[in-house]
Length: 137
Image (cartoon, rainbow, N blue to C red; front, side, top):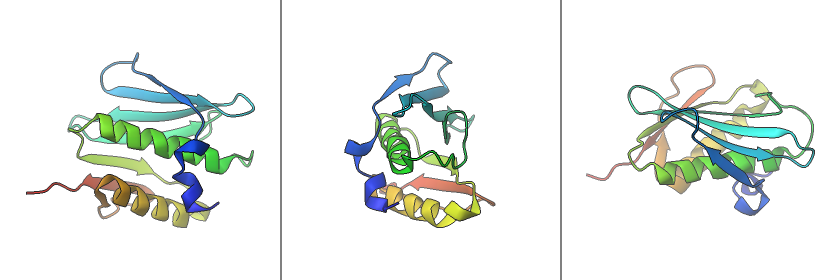
């Protein structure tokens, strides 16, 4: 999986936004070629930070069912759009589970930060990634 593919919005599956579960919870929903649901969930905590996770067919792990690059592109595109729409957001967290994907998540976090004008903060622990908006003073 090449990193540039993951950041190519033209490879992402089309998604729709759903805010029906309340003001602190937003979901971007898409369907892959086989009709499996892809969900990118954004949950704001009491400090206004966003916790992000995504799943395909109900699984947050590697499903081994192909189209991984398109699924990641969909999630990355939704994250970028969400951050652009929420200019009050200063911190996001996401979990990158799986030792086999650690390097991939590290590279995604770095590139995503550079593209959005954010930086990676120290990892709070385990597979949790923390991204902080760069604020000019």
